[in-house]
Image (cartoon, rainbow, N blue to C red; front, side):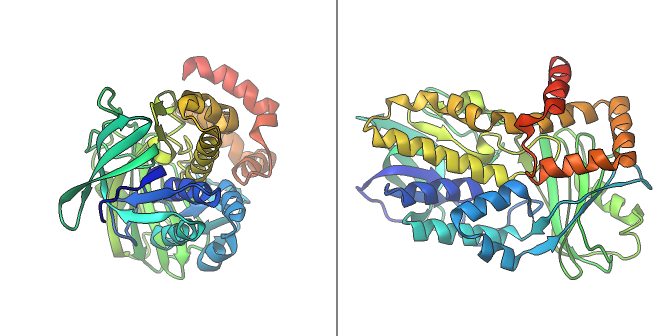
Amino acid sequence: MKETSKIYDVIVFGSGPAGTSAAGKLSAEGNSVLLIDRYKFPREKVCGDGLTGDSIRMLKKFGIWDEVSAEAFRSDKVQLFPFEKYSFTLNVPVYTLKRTVFDSIMRKWAAECGADIGVAEYIGCISRKNNVSKVKVRVPETEDYKFIKGRIVVLAIGCQRNFSYAFSRSKKLNMETKSIAVRGYCKADWNIKNPLIFFDKRFPGGYVWIFPMSDSVYNVGCGAAVKTQRLKSKLNGFLKENQYTSISEPEWLSKPKGAFIQKGLCKLSSAVNNNILLTGETLGSTYPFTGEGIGKAMETGYLTAEFVNETLKKGSIDDLEDYPEFLKDKIGKAYLPYIAAEAVFKRRFIGLAAFILLCSSKGLCNYAADILSERKNPENSKLIKLLYKIIKPLN
């Protein structure tokens, strides 16, 4: 990546779903945008690879759903196991596509919208003068340091606890997390045709997932509270014992790797500092309880672009402080059912009772499927509003 004297309207760091969504939307609106990631693509990313209602909606909005769905594996239901031999089914379409493929499609779309693409690492050094930020970056190939300039900086750098990203010289971005996930790809003779999710006491605050990607190839992983020890070992132990996976030992095509997760818009109150905005996983866009991340990463990225574009149109960037309230108003209520579900199911006996109810009630399963697939708007649900009011003081 070459150093340039050009002053971009927006510099977006991070080429995941949030960053590319923001860069593509902003570029399509006529802004000059530089989209940067510290990795060359394609690159591996710890993810369940699942695309559900919100992901599908955003991809259709971007006009690339046909391209994505043509590459993806489709299932029409998800089976959840709260107990070893008891389950309930959610009739909801789920598409699975490796992030190496998905991210490449998204980056290509952003570039076609007009974004410049670069490879460099954000190291947290930003100086600001006359409403222009001068950002220091490291170029991985040469280990050189370069400077780039932009009026607004968007951070979609994920959740990386091993680096203290400076929000500015005066403010540090706290990257503490509460959840962790491990994911690998394997080939096995398991005859699993639709996504399976298992709630097991070895994975507190999370679950094990087995998602078919194609014939005999699976995305296998687990999530849990961040303090959970030896996740990879526990995942292997689970696979050896489980009724669906013990019949055949998996051949790991890509061994399990770990990543931290931020959920429930946990960084919303810190989402802006001067002309620097957070979006996607850096903002905490992942849904609580389900751990769905791709759809809400894209949606927050799109909304960030919408907010930034309107701000740039005004000719002044002084109104950026309204950004957290803007996001809260746009998508805050969408998180309520997931926050409520996480609060319910982390309490052992209440959670067990709720699971038993789901296992025995087709109506409740259909209701949950409608929320997951966005066939039903949670903002209009009296049940969810009531449940959230009850749970909020306890959470």
